[in-house]
View 1 (cartoon, rainbow, N blue to C red):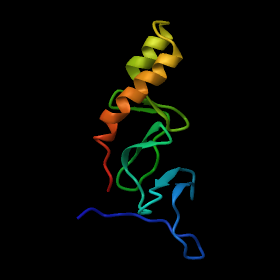
View 2: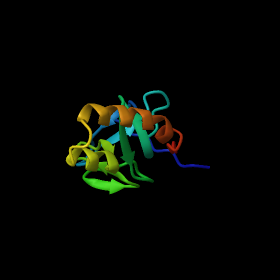
View 3: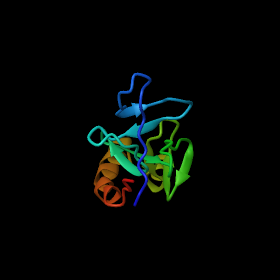
Length: 110
């Protein structure tokens, strides 16, 4: 059975959505209130949260995805193509949204 993590405020209420209780960001599902790990699409952007504690990844590369300082992931191939001037940033958004279905199928919700 997978362990689920939750965050409670001092008054006892359970947190949901984005929280930053320390120097890192975490995301708690707004429906079941548990902390997310792995790949997660939130607001049309793709993020990665380290297991087991859900800290959001920043300024790194994971599985051919570049993750920026805000935690947003973009495929490395697309970044390279944009840097070489082969495609525009508008196409980058289209390619990313086309890939979200694939990424969502590998999301880990523990």
